[in-house]
Image (cartoon, rainbow, N blue to C red):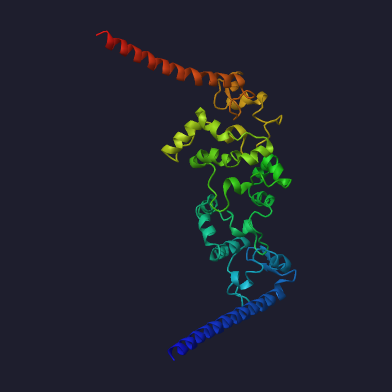
Length: 359
């Protein structure tokens, strides 16, 4: 009897669990159906063109929503109208308290954090939020970069990132689009960096700070030390090694270890190659071709002569094909120095042996 009772108890448990699961699925379906019905009610008005909200300032905000654009957005199958616009179920809707469109946008700024709390938290450390907290209401919020009802997946398309940033940084974008990176990105090349690859997306730091300048070499090395990627374009991957081996790189690395607040006074990558207007090294207007290199060096070394840039090996390790004289001198010293040290040790040893035997 005990065994039968135990079996019956187990079947009762599984039956109850099954009923709860079915009830949960039914409830979820009912809620989803109710949400869809509510969204249909919203779109009955907001799907029609010409619906406009006029603010006390005279600003006008179109209230029509393209249902196809929303359904194809990243939120289309996940969120309903009320998930972002809570409190507007009743008709007529509550009166909007904002005085203009920008104030209305800012009032909805924190809605996104309900689902994207990690990204929202990162924005609090960004230079954008710093500017916003100082009173600049035009500092970008979530919808300024991602849109509202037509939110696409992050970074899709990649070229759209620079177009988004151009809304506020037009001059920078124009310089970037003409650069070797930007031109390739516009052609659909996904190998080159867009704005967020260098500046990040939500926790964007101020590029004028000492820490950002210190981090610039490491930032560039992320791509330029990737051998498969650089081999694809015939670019040297010795960037990090050669830069850190010279006076500039060694100084920056030493200062970074001391404090993040020390602004490097020596050249980092962008001082020579440019910032947003980086060109191909074989471009006639490139600052790094032989004809223009002296003027680049003279930015920091005003007394530099025509022979001064000759000491730079263009981030290549010396070899028989690149700087062969330097390579041969290095090889010579690799043999000479050990030979001298061994000879010196042998000389001292023999001298001590002679002194010991002549006592």
